[in-house]
View 1: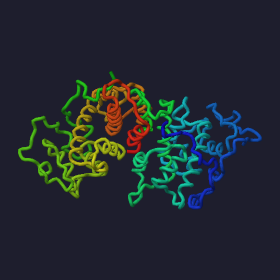
View 2 (view 1 turned 90 degrees about the horizontal axis):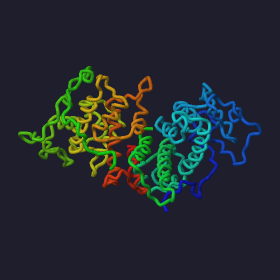
View 3 (view 1 turned 120 degrees about the vertical axis):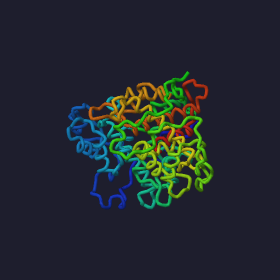
Amino acid sequence: MANYSGYPAPNYAPSAPPMPDSYSAGRPPTEGYAHPPPPRSYSHPYPSPWASGAGGAGGSYFPPGTPPEVIRSFQAVDRDQSGFIEESELQAALSSAYHKFSIRTVRLLMFLFKNPSNPSKMGPVEFAALWGCLGQWQAIFYRFDRDRSGKIDSVELKDALISLGYAVPPSVIQVLISNYTDVYGRGALNFDNFVECGMIVKGLTEKFKERDTRYTGSATFSYDDFLLMIIPFIVP
Amino acid sequence: MANYSGYPAPNYAPSAPPMPDSYSAGRPPTEGYAHPPPPRSYSHPYPSPWASGAGGAGGSYFPPGTPPEVIRSFQAVDRDQSGFIEESELQAALSSAYHKFSIRTVRLLMFLFKNPSNPSKMGPVEFAALWGCLGQWQAIFYRFDRDRSGKIDSVELKDALISLGYAVPPSVIQVLISNYTDVYGRGALNFDNFVECGMIVKGLTEKFKERDTRYTGSATFSYDDFLLMIIPFIVP
């Protein structure tokens, strides 16, 4: 049995903690993550115009039950109402609710949550999925950032990844964290760095699992498939 | 038989063309690449102080026959004479002779040509190997940049990679070049982009070949090895 699961570990928390003071200080209040994700039974009394079919020329709509603030965030940046947003628009939408992500992390998120029929843009379905995923990840980041410093270290990264269902060995943690060090040379990741590292592990694990469907812990690739699979992570 | 070779193709040119006017215009003259690499029989009448053992506290020396300009370039940036240079120093050394490489490309070069005993720095042996490799790659870049625009397109990238010994399918070329487009959306790589793309192919091919020693075109990886091998390319 391989030592990754890809599924939430038992201590996975579906709802997010309130935004700590150290994160909201100095920023305008947002609705983005202070609200816990909706329960499974959540539904709108009336469908949102974006969920019901008036959602832009792209013909893509939000899944039923998408929280209104997610739809508002998408609409706020999709100014031409095309139903798709580009990487700079995604960066703006996420920055207002979560964190000022680097364009590198945003590209990685675009790549991992892409619309298969339009890989260079993101539609409502992918946006809602990404939003929910980041909510879960932010909850876990806050849980392990115990001193509310806004940073987690290598041990906390390892535990946070286990909480997300990815049991990676210490050697991988060291490689992941090597570029994110504080002035003392110790590993220190802010939420942007954490999302970048975690999404790399998540994306590579999913690619690996596509070739290891029986969970043996090893997978075989052809040379062409190997390059095609890996290069988008390197030049996202 | 796999469709990569890893060895220079028959049309590999060991010596570099003169620097075209469009590249040297506006920049101070350098000795870096206008000189062809030395022939195999090249030797210094007297060993350089760096080649003979006075080369810094690190105890690393240039290989016999290293051209003087390579040693001078290294010395010019290794101000503390430690015998090792960091990424910003490598960037400075290469910029004076080759091209103003992005720090991302420099990090990739540091990773691919690293000193196994000191991976965060580069010693004379690795520096000389990198210098020679870039000379070969620059010659090939110039050969395919037929209009001397300073850019090559996707077809030329494919042919250039074949000249370097890497026969990659068009789908891989498209993924590689997708982030390097001109105002018309056409693929257009300058020398920095070309080195980044080519070094990614070179590095991944070498990793793949380590697991495909019989050139079958497929390779098997464990999950941990897969992550350890790929992640340094993504967060170099």
